[in-house]
Image 1 (cartoon, rainbow, N blue to C red):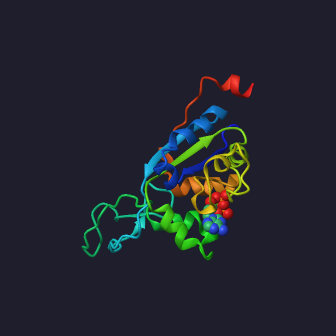
Image 2: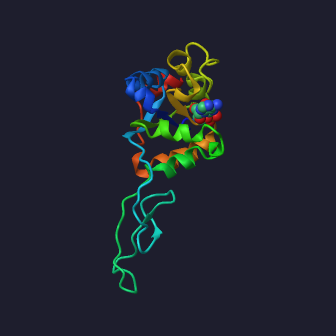
Image 3: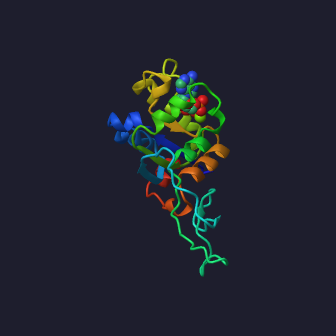
Amino acid sequence: ELQEKTLVLVKPDAVQRRLVGHVIQRFERRGFKLVAMKLLQVALPTQLPPPPLRVPCSRCHAECWEGGAKGGHPLGVPTVTLRCHQADRGLLDKHYQQLQQKPFYPALLAYMTSGPLVAMVWEGYNVVRSTRAMVGDTNSATAAAGTIRGDFSMHVSRNVVHASDSVETAQREIGFWFQRDELVAWESGDRDYTYG
Ligand code: DAT
Ligand code: MG
């Protein structure tokens, strides 16, 4: 599947340590194709009250909400069109759904909201499995030399990058971090030389 995609996050420690370019270079050099990328600061929960009328967001495929239909609420309540607010704590709660009960989860949240991170979608043959191999073990102590974590991380709680762990997880995670129109479909000129 040439169009398999995976989510990679360059975590806040790596942004602070100026490793963004290096991480991108590893995936580029391997031959994977970058199809989406953005720098974002995940915010802690905002105190904003919910809008008066909530209907599903027409722009965003995740559980995001915007103001009501044109013409306003039948009872005269003003409707407000809200932008998607994906980059808040709820995003990390979804992204790390399986870890919410772990004792280290509060520390993980604090780390992931401590500064900007870079979210990317990479595409290519077996990209999910290959990217996991390039990232290395979760625990830096056992991450092989030559992997990103094996080369750049000292501790599991500061492990530089995230990469989706299965094709299904990748599809879900890409949906958490990106809207559909943020993914760019393009043909790379070296395709026949990369894949034969
Ligand atoms: P991975 O990032 O390799 O997919 P994971 O999904 O099991 O690993 O965990 C997600 C992140 O949670 C991991 O990158 C770092 C953090 N984490 C996992 N186990 C931890 C632990 N024992 N102590 C602190 N942080 C941990
Ligand atoms: Mg994981």
